[in-house]
Amino acid sequence: MGLLETTISGRKRRSNHAHVVAELGRGIVSGSIPEGSLLPGDTEMSARFGVSRTVLREAMKTLAAKRLVEAKAKVGTRVLDRSTWNFFDSDVLGWRFEAGLDSEFIEHLAEMRLALEPAAAAAAAVRATSDDIVALYAIAAKFDDLSHSPGSIAQVDLEFHVAIARMSGNPFMRSASALIEAALAISFQLSSPAASPETIDEVASNHLRIAHAIASRDPVKAETAMRHVIDVGRDRIVNSIAHAEQQISQLIQS
Image (tube, helix red, strand yellow):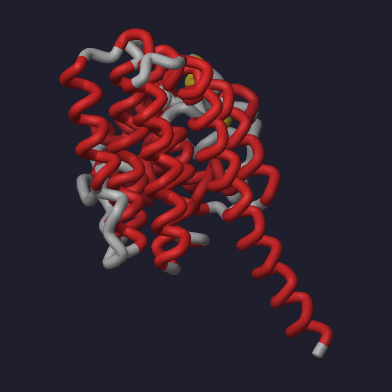
């Protein structure tokens, strides 16, 4: 289950392994388990979570693969500095999402999307097959529905952007889809375009413009259209955060 689906449904993974990974990962990313600290030993951790040492060690391997911890003989398992964390990992992004959103995080996420997705759209304009383009238009048509809920329009948005990453023909683009999903999960929670018919129309038109550019085999127009979509989405989220902060400030002062 991806970050967007988890955000929409509210469901969490339930296996013992997933529970241990999520609890520790969430604690590390939120800062409640400090960077540089040593985690308790196997006996204490197994008792805390009520799991076997085998489950615990597999969980530690998972966290190590995400570059959150590192185990050393005769030292123990140490929490790594955030500069090493794999923010392309969907779980790490999800825990950062849960830890609280701020304008800096939104900007960093948008910067990465702007570095990758316009290039993916340009590549798709060159490499997409006729069948790819037909499929992309079919996805774009799904935006044009004024009955969209925040969840349904976010799912269409994800489908559209992942399709372009695949159409780019570059496997690295497809691997970065967790960033797209994180941005759409934030949009779903804070500032969904499903809030009004006008914003649904705007989103539908902007994404159709990307499809037209790819279909016309124009990399420059495809890149520009994709950049515009990301900029609009970022501005909508930042404005939503600023509005919420202003309301809180007014309540405190009243």
